[in-house]
Amino acid sequence: MTGRGAGAAAAAINLCSITLAFVLAALAVGVDFFAVSRPVWRLWVTSWRDAHVPTADSTFALESLAICTSMGQMGLEADWGQLDPDFAAGKKALAAQDWNEAIAALKLASLRDPQNADIENYVGYAYYRLRQMGPAMHYYQKALRHNHRHRGVHEHLGELYLALGEAAKAERQLAILAEICLIPCEEYGNLERVIAIYKKQLTR
Image (cartoon, rainbow, N blue to C red; front, side, top):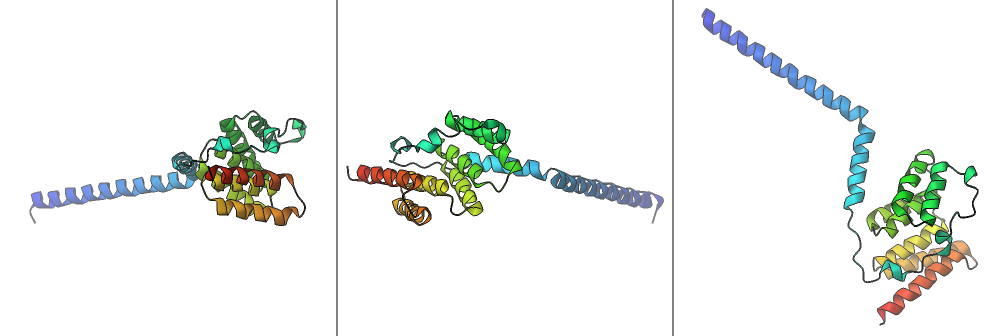
C-alpha cells in the first residue's frame, strides 16, 4: 500500500473511531438523563394524559345533579391545624369550589399520604366538577383500591356514571352502598336522589 493510501486508511479509521465515541457518549448521556429525570418525564406524561382525556358529551348536565351537602360544606368547621397543610388547603378550595386549586393542593398532600382514599376521592371529585371525566374516573378507582368500602367514592362514582349516560353502572354503585351502609346513609340517599332526577329527565 502506498504512503498516500495508508494515510487515507488511517484517517478513515480515526474518523470512524471518533464517530463511534461520539455515539457512545450520546447514548450514555441519554441513559443518565432517563435514570435521573424519570420523575420529571413521568410528570410530563401524566400532565399530558390528564389534559388530553376527552370529556363526556352527555345530555345529562352536571348542574342537574344535586351536589351532596357533605362536599359543599366540607371542612368549614374543621380544626385545620391538625391536618396536613396541603390537605387542609385542598378541602378549603373544594368548599370554595376552586377546583384547580383543590387538585393542586390535594396532589401535594397525596405525596405524603399516598394510601389516603379520602384525598383520591376529593381529587376525583374536583376533576369531575371540571368535566374532566377521564381523570375523575382514574382517581375514584384509585381511591377504591385503597378502600373498596369508601361510601363517598361509590356515591361520586355513581354520579359520574350518570353524567356519562351509564345508568346501570350508577345503580350498581347504589346497590353497593346499600350493602355497605346496612341502614340508610347520606351517600345512599344522595345517589338515589340523583338517579331519580336522571330517570325523570329521560322520560321528558
